Image (cartoon, rainbow, N blue to C red; front, side, top):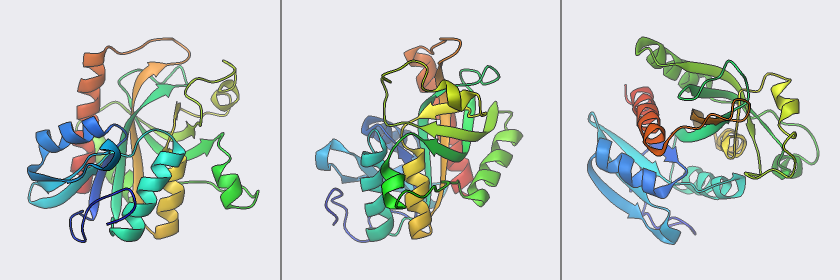
Length: 234
Protein backbone atom coordinates (compact mmCIF):
# COMPACT_ATOMS: atom_id res chain seq x y z
CA UNK A 1 0.00 0.00 0.00
CA UNK A 2 1.40 3.40 -1.01
CA UNK A 3 0.68 6.82 0.46
CA UNK A 4 -2.22 7.66 -1.86
CA UNK A 5 -3.30 4.23 -3.14
CA UNK A 6 -4.70 1.58 -0.79
CA UNK A 7 -4.11 -1.39 -3.09
CA UNK A 8 -2.23 -4.45 -1.89
CA UNK A 9 0.54 -6.10 -3.96
CA UNK A 10 -1.00 -7.81 -6.97
CA UNK A 11 -4.24 -5.81 -6.86
CA UNK A 12 -3.26 -3.61 -9.83
CA UNK A 13 -2.72 -4.96 -13.34
CA UNK A 14 0.34 -4.22 -15.47
CA UNK A 15 -1.94 -2.60 -18.09
CA UNK A 16 -3.91 0.51 -17.14
CA UNK A 17 -6.44 3.03 -18.44
CA UNK A 18 -5.76 6.39 -16.76
CA UNK A 19 -8.61 8.97 -16.73
CA UNK A 20 -8.42 12.17 -14.71
CA UNK A 21 -11.93 11.96 -13.27
CA UNK A 22 -12.42 9.14 -10.71
CA UNK A 23 -16.11 8.94 -11.65
CA UNK A 24 -15.06 8.23 -15.21
CA UNK A 25 -12.82 5.48 -13.85
CA UNK A 26 -15.89 3.96 -12.20
CA UNK A 27 -17.94 4.24 -15.41
CA UNK A 28 -15.16 2.65 -17.48
CA UNK A 29 -14.82 -0.24 -15.03
CA UNK A 30 -18.57 -0.86 -14.88
CA UNK A 31 -18.97 -0.61 -18.66
CA UNK A 32 -15.97 -2.53 -19.98
CA UNK A 33 -14.43 -4.71 -17.26
CA UNK A 34 -15.65 -8.08 -16.09
CA UNK A 35 -15.51 -8.90 -12.36
CA UNK A 36 -14.21 -5.40 -11.57
CA UNK A 37 -13.04 -4.87 -8.00
CA UNK A 38 -12.44 -1.45 -6.45
CA UNK A 39 -8.95 -1.40 -4.92
CA UNK A 40 -8.75 2.30 -4.01
CA UNK A 41 -11.02 4.95 -2.49
CA UNK A 42 -8.36 7.10 -0.79
CA UNK A 43 -9.22 10.79 -1.32
CA UNK A 44 -12.04 9.63 -3.59
CA UNK A 45 -9.56 8.75 -6.35
CA UNK A 46 -11.20 5.50 -7.42
CA UNK A 47 -9.26 2.59 -8.91
CA UNK A 48 -10.53 -0.74 -10.25
CA UNK A 49 -9.12 -3.98 -11.63
CA UNK A 50 -11.00 -6.47 -13.78
CA UNK A 51 -10.62 -8.27 -17.08
CA UNK A 52 -11.31 -7.28 -20.67
CA UNK A 53 -11.31 -9.99 -23.32
CA UNK A 54 -9.53 -12.24 -20.85
CA UNK A 55 -6.72 -9.85 -19.91
CA UNK A 56 -6.30 -8.05 -16.59
CA UNK A 57 -6.81 -4.29 -16.87
CA UNK A 58 -6.86 -1.60 -14.19
CA UNK A 59 -8.53 1.80 -14.36
CA UNK A 60 -7.27 4.53 -12.05
CA UNK A 61 -8.23 8.19 -11.69
CA UNK A 62 -5.31 10.63 -11.53
CA UNK A 63 -6.90 14.02 -10.84
CA UNK A 64 -6.21 17.35 -12.54
CA UNK A 65 -2.84 18.90 -13.32
CA UNK A 66 0.78 17.79 -13.36
CA UNK A 67 1.24 17.62 -9.56
CA UNK A 68 -1.68 15.22 -9.13
CA UNK A 69 -0.67 13.17 -12.18
CA UNK A 70 2.89 12.97 -10.85
CA UNK A 71 1.78 11.53 -7.50
CA UNK A 72 -0.33 8.75 -8.97
CA UNK A 73 2.01 7.92 -11.85
CA UNK A 74 5.02 7.68 -9.51
CA UNK A 75 3.26 5.40 -7.02
CA UNK A 76 1.73 3.19 -9.70
CA UNK A 77 5.03 2.75 -11.54
CA UNK A 78 7.39 2.55 -8.56
CA UNK A 79 5.29 0.50 -6.13
CA UNK A 80 2.69 -1.42 -8.15
CA UNK A 81 4.54 -2.46 -11.29
CA UNK A 82 2.31 -0.86 -13.94
CA UNK A 83 4.04 -1.39 -17.30
CA UNK A 84 1.66 0.06 -19.90
CA UNK A 85 -0.62 3.05 -19.36
CA UNK A 86 -2.92 5.05 -21.60
CA UNK A 87 -4.25 8.37 -20.34
CA UNK A 88 -7.73 9.17 -21.65
CA UNK A 89 -8.85 12.76 -21.33
CA UNK A 90 -10.35 15.81 -23.00
CA UNK A 91 -8.50 18.70 -24.58
CA UNK A 92 -8.94 22.09 -26.22
CA UNK A 93 -8.08 22.44 -29.92
CA UNK A 94 -5.39 24.93 -30.97
CA UNK A 95 -5.35 24.44 -34.75
CA UNK A 96 -8.05 25.18 -37.31
CA UNK A 97 -7.61 21.73 -38.90
CA UNK A 98 -8.30 20.12 -35.52
CA UNK A 99 -12.03 19.60 -35.00
CA UNK A 100 -14.13 18.84 -31.96
CA UNK A 101 -14.63 15.07 -31.59
CA UNK A 102 -11.17 14.42 -33.08
CA UNK A 103 -8.92 12.11 -31.06
CA UNK A 104 -5.45 13.53 -30.53
CA UNK A 105 -2.58 11.08 -30.04
CA UNK A 106 0.05 13.01 -28.11
CA UNK A 107 3.39 12.23 -29.77
CA UNK A 108 5.13 14.72 -27.50
CA UNK A 109 4.24 17.32 -24.88
CA UNK A 110 5.37 20.93 -24.48
CA UNK A 111 4.67 22.55 -21.14
CA UNK A 112 4.47 25.95 -19.46
CA UNK A 113 5.04 24.27 -16.09
CA UNK A 114 8.26 24.68 -14.11
CA UNK A 115 8.19 21.09 -12.82
CA UNK A 116 10.53 19.65 -15.45
CA UNK A 117 12.83 22.68 -15.28
CA UNK A 118 13.35 21.87 -11.61
CA UNK A 119 13.71 18.14 -12.26
CA UNK A 120 16.37 18.70 -14.95
CA UNK A 121 18.12 21.64 -13.24
CA UNK A 122 17.10 24.19 -15.86
CA UNK A 123 17.90 22.01 -18.87
CA UNK A 124 15.21 21.25 -21.46
CA UNK A 125 13.65 17.78 -21.66
CA UNK A 126 11.30 16.56 -24.40
CA UNK A 127 8.59 14.25 -22.95
CA UNK A 128 7.58 11.70 -25.60
CA UNK A 129 4.99 8.95 -26.00
CA UNK A 130 6.03 5.32 -26.25
CA UNK A 131 6.30 4.65 -29.99
CA UNK A 132 5.00 1.07 -29.82
CA UNK A 133 1.79 2.15 -28.07
CA UNK A 134 1.44 5.15 -30.36
CA UNK A 135 1.80 3.02 -33.49
CA UNK A 136 -0.59 0.36 -32.20
CA UNK A 137 -3.22 2.98 -31.32
CA UNK A 138 -2.80 4.67 -34.71
CA UNK A 139 -3.28 1.39 -36.54
CA UNK A 140 -6.35 0.54 -34.47
CA UNK A 141 -7.88 3.98 -35.01
CA UNK A 142 -7.21 3.86 -38.75
CA UNK A 143 -8.83 0.44 -39.07
CA UNK A 144 -11.95 1.71 -37.30
CA UNK A 145 -12.23 4.97 -39.31
CA UNK A 146 -11.77 7.22 -36.27
CA UNK A 147 -10.92 10.87 -36.87
CA UNK A 148 -7.43 11.18 -35.40
CA UNK A 149 -4.53 13.61 -35.33
CA UNK A 150 -0.98 12.82 -34.17
CA UNK A 151 1.44 15.46 -32.93
CA UNK A 152 2.60 17.78 -30.20
CA UNK A 153 0.36 18.92 -27.34
CA UNK A 154 0.68 21.61 -24.69
CA UNK A 155 0.48 20.61 -21.03
CA UNK A 156 -0.44 23.73 -19.07
CA UNK A 157 -0.52 24.45 -15.35
CA UNK A 158 -3.43 26.87 -15.78
CA UNK A 159 -6.98 26.00 -16.79
CA UNK A 160 -7.90 29.69 -16.58
CA UNK A 161 -4.96 31.50 -18.16
CA UNK A 162 -4.03 35.02 -17.02
CA UNK A 163 -3.76 36.06 -20.67
CA UNK A 164 -5.94 34.83 -23.50
CA UNK A 165 -2.97 35.04 -25.88
CA UNK A 166 -0.53 32.82 -23.98
CA UNK A 167 -1.37 29.75 -26.05
CA UNK A 168 -0.98 31.49 -29.42
CA UNK A 169 2.80 31.07 -29.53
CA UNK A 170 2.25 27.29 -29.38
CA UNK A 171 -0.38 27.45 -32.13
CA UNK A 172 2.22 29.19 -34.29
CA UNK A 173 4.57 26.24 -33.79
CA UNK A 174 2.09 23.53 -34.77
CA UNK A 175 0.95 22.38 -31.33
CA UNK A 176 -2.41 20.66 -31.75
CA UNK A 177 -4.17 21.13 -28.42
CA UNK A 178 -3.91 22.08 -24.76
CA UNK A 179 -4.43 19.88 -21.66
CA UNK A 180 -2.93 19.57 -18.17
CA UNK A 181 -1.18 16.22 -17.52
CA UNK A 182 0.66 14.58 -20.42
CA UNK A 183 4.12 16.12 -19.92
CA UNK A 184 4.22 14.78 -16.36
CA UNK A 185 3.00 11.32 -17.41
CA UNK A 186 5.60 10.96 -20.17
CA UNK A 187 8.45 12.21 -17.96
CA UNK A 188 7.71 9.85 -15.08
CA UNK A 189 7.04 6.95 -17.44
CA UNK A 190 10.50 7.49 -18.94
CA UNK A 191 12.04 7.50 -15.46
CA UNK A 192 10.56 4.07 -14.67
CA UNK A 193 10.74 2.49 -18.13
CA UNK A 194 6.94 2.41 -18.53
CA UNK A 195 5.16 2.55 -21.90
CA UNK A 196 2.81 5.55 -21.85
CA UNK A 197 0.45 7.25 -24.28
CA UNK A 198 -2.11 10.05 -24.01
CA UNK A 199 -5.31 9.89 -26.05
CA UNK A 200 -7.27 13.14 -25.95
CA UNK A 201 -10.74 13.90 -27.29
CA UNK A 202 -11.17 17.49 -28.48
CA UNK A 203 -14.12 18.73 -26.44
CA UNK A 204 -13.74 22.45 -27.12
CA UNK A 205 -11.78 24.74 -29.42
CA UNK A 206 -9.89 27.89 -28.46
CA UNK A 207 -9.99 29.33 -32.00
CA UNK A 208 -13.51 28.49 -33.19
CA UNK A 209 -15.02 28.63 -29.66
CA UNK A 210 -16.99 25.46 -30.41
CA UNK A 211 -17.87 23.29 -27.41
CA UNK A 212 -19.38 19.83 -27.24
CA UNK A 213 -22.48 19.21 -25.16
CA UNK A 214 -22.23 16.98 -22.08
CA UNK A 215 -23.76 14.10 -24.06
CA UNK A 216 -21.36 14.62 -26.98
CA UNK A 217 -18.41 14.72 -24.57
CA UNK A 218 -19.46 11.44 -22.99
CA UNK A 219 -19.99 9.68 -26.32
CA UNK A 220 -16.62 10.86 -27.63
CA UNK A 221 -14.91 9.91 -24.41
CA UNK A 222 -16.22 6.34 -24.46
CA UNK A 223 -15.17 5.89 -28.10
CA UNK A 224 -11.66 6.92 -27.03
CA UNK A 225 -11.75 4.45 -24.11
CA UNK A 226 -12.63 1.68 -26.55
CA UNK A 227 -9.61 2.67 -28.67
CA UNK A 228 -7.39 2.53 -25.56
CA UNK A 229 -8.66 -0.93 -24.68
CA UNK A 230 -8.11 -2.18 -28.23
CA UNK A 231 -4.57 -0.84 -28.02
CA UNK A 232 -3.77 -2.50 -24.69
CA UNK A 233 -5.50 -5.84 -25.26
CA UNK A 234 -3.91 -7.93 -28.00
